[in-house]
Length: 262
Image 1 (tube, one colour):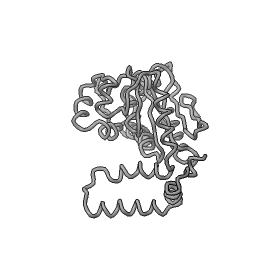
Image 2 (tube, rainbow, N blue to C red):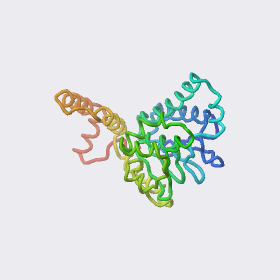
Image 3 (tube, rainbow, N blue to C red):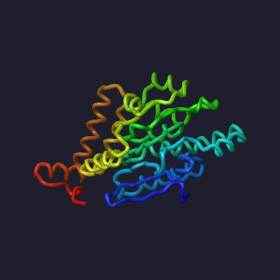
Image 4 (spheres, rainbow, N blue to C red):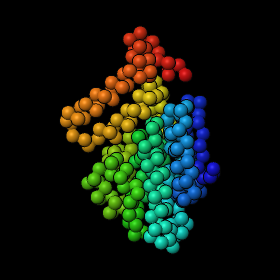
């Protein structure tokens, strides 16, 4: 696969997907998008992978779209641009819907489409020195394919501002707006993520995956008898599952669950 992105699974069963184009501030192009899609699918299908960390080499997380890629897009027809944009949209949705916990490790600049990558992750830990910008309108474009995820993360009113102004905002503000889960010193990035993963791996793998899907299922639905019934069906199914039975037995017997012994 393309070496501008690397993939490895460590001894904790955590997939590390790394943007590896530091000399270009990890700006992405069509080849990187294709590779990222492949690796997100690979992590999703690997039953041994418990979590995914999306990270980047160098000073920047990602400067967004690569200039040469944008130059090529400028000569495309509308249909060709649609097809090209759908590849990016597919990559983002593959990350967003990945049935494992996803964590973004953010340092330096995260501009344009990079904000979308961060918003697609379940958890985002950023350096206090990192900077963010939804920069598309500066060059006469719009943050279209990333918009569903950024709006979900930051809220409609906030996005009305930053989609239009293309202001650069700080990690502190990104934390307040919901784009970042935590903002720490650069020296604390890895230890903070390791702490989260350490706690995560104590939990039932299937329960974690189903808890993630539960959020999307319940979000914005009216709390009525239908939703009450559907959520009750979900917990009933989990309680009688192999993992649910093991977890309950371990709790009642005051022992370690089998998945913690791995």
